[in-house]
Image (cartoon, rainbow, N blue to C red; front, top):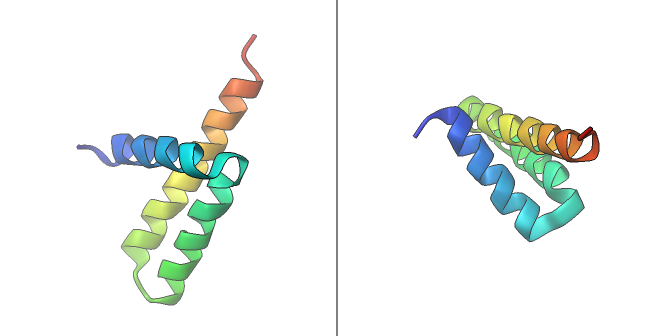
Length: 63
């Protein structure tokens, strides 16, 4: 599975479990992994947070 599809899937899961707080949860994990020295996972979680925010923007700005 591609990284983009992984981020989409994780975004859907976080939105289902955490609702409007999904992006903040992903940001938390990105920061946690950065502090633990795992740049790869930090970047992955950052991508999930961006995906959640993009999906939210898309839902709110549908013409």
